Image (cartoon, rainbow, N blue to C red; front, side, top):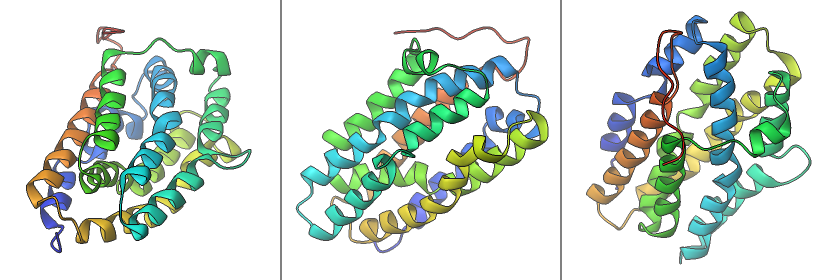
Length: 224
């Protein structure tokens, strides 16, 4: 897939910053209850991301692909300031305890998001799994920048509390570049990589749909 335009166009059409959840976050109209619940729910994805990366790493026969995925997983998980830990520190700045985040009752859409990425990592062709990762990580620099601005301007959260977002604003430029290089050599067929790009984006939008963006909205279902 020397031409990544179809994947990039698919991502642009369903960019996360176009979702009502992030529009409300940026505008400062997102209810605090939704921000807190998002913080609890997102942890399941973030804490599992290294497993998706290492599952793809273990299945790849290409040393260059394995090296890129391993480097990504290392960035996610090593040290006392690993990314799951940084997320828990952000949660603490919002007033959430570690237990509240680590033991949160999962929403149906959260489980669907995690299941989609696990299927991409463990069942789909490796390059298609990389496409699912790219669908998200290619957006994170812009999403992180927007989140940081909204948190400081509207929710009084800044400085060390938003280190998670500051890290992803920078590091995912490199992760996305590495994933683009992998996708340029994709062998599974353009349509398969594009299909998993779409599955990943649909799962993210459904996840964000599960959080009320105004006080008058009902509470989406849990479990499932």
